[in-house]
Image (cartoon, rainbow, N blue to C red):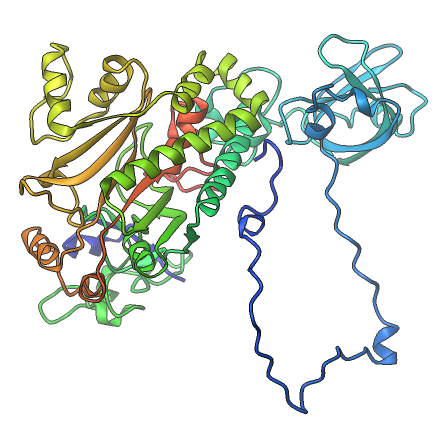
Length: 550
C-alpha cells in the first residue's frame, strides 16, 4: 500500500502493512545433514523423572484410532521414467490420481490422458463401457481439467507415443471442471495471459516443467552446500539496514491502520515530530524498518562464528521497473566463507554453478528435452558447456579494453568507471569467449557496495561478477572489507549512518577475519536453466509494480 506520507521519507519506499519435480526429493535439508558422531553424553537423573514412558490410562486407551502409516504415492514419473519406460509394470494393478488433459470418446473405447504433475508425460487410460464409472463418461463429467481417480491394470500400449497404458477397471471423478469456462484448453495461449491465471498455469506443460526444474535447482543448492560443510542460516526478512545502499526498500510499518474496508484514514493520522517528520518512535519497531534486499550482512555474522554458511530465502526491492528482468519479490542464495579471499569466492561460485546445472541435466531429462524443443533450441548444449568448460577470469580493466577494441556498437557507452550493462556482459561471454562462462573481477569501488574490500590501488575493490551466455551476470560477489578503519571510512564516504551498522562493525572489532561471499538471484538461475525469457514466468506468483494478485 503506497501512502501519501511516503514523500516525507528521505528514501523512496513503498509501504507495507505489518499485521517441482524431477525425481521427487525428500526434505532438502534433513537427509543431507551427516549423522552426528558418537559423543559422551551426560544424563541428569532425579527421582521425579521416570525412565519409562507413562502408559495411557484405560479410559484413554479406548478412545481414538492409530494414525495410519504415511506412504509415498506411486507417481506417473516413476511408472514411465525408467529405462524400459514402464514395461516392467505390465500386468500389475495400480491407481492413478491426477487431472484430465484430454478425453477422446470413440465408438468402442475411450482414451483419457491423465497427468499428476510429476512429469510431462501423461498416463493414457483406456476405458471400455463395461468398466465401473463409465456413466461418468456418458454424462460428460470427464472433461479437461477435471480431477480423477482411476484404477486399472498396466498393459503394453498399442500406440507409438508410449510403451504402456492403463486398462481402466474403475473411474471416479473427484472434482468436475466446467469445459465452457475452464481457461486452459488444448489450444496455445500466451504466457502473458497465463500470468493473469497464475493459480492455474502450473497445469500447463511449460509451467509444470519450470516448477520441477526450479525444485531440482533448490534441492541441488542445499545438497551442494551441505555436502561441502556449509550451515544453512535463516536470515531475517525485516531489517533496519540497507545492504545495497540503494534505498529502494519496502517500508514495514503499523502507522497506517490495517483496515482495507475503512476509507476514512487520512495522512493527518500518521504521527509526526515537531519538525513535521514521521515519528518512527511510535511505530512497531520504534524506528524505520524495511523488507530486506539481501541476507548477506546477517550471513556474515554467522560466518564469523561457524566458518561457512549460506542463506536461501526471499528478498524484496521496491524498484519501479516493469522489465522482463525485474521482480519486487525474489529469492537469493548467499553463501559466506570465513578465512577466504576473492579467489576462494570465485572457486566456490564456479563449483556451485557447475554442480546444480549438472544435477538438472541428469535428473530433469524429460523437462530439459521439452525446453530444448519448445523454448530454446540448443539449451542442453549451452548448459553442458557450463559444466564441462573451464571458467575464464579477467579484470574489469581488461574487460573494458576488450569491449573498446571490439569496435562493436553498443547501446550503452563503454568507459572505465561505468558499470557493465547486460549487452556488454553477453558480448564477452557469448562472442569474445565463445560461450564459456567468464568471471570479471576488481571493479571500480565507486560502482560497488560499501562492504567490498578495497584493493591496494585504492581505486578498485575485490569484487567479481560471474557472466554466462544468454543472461549476462548470474552471480555477484566480493571479498568483504574486514578492516574496521577502511569500513568506517567507506560508510562515511557514502553518507551511511554508522550507528545503523554498529553490530556489523563489531565483527571487525572482535576477531575479524578475511571472508568472502556471493549472491545469486535464484530466478535468474531458473531462467538460465530453462531458457524462459521473462523472469515473471519462473516464479510461482510474480510480484511486480501494480501487481500483487494471488
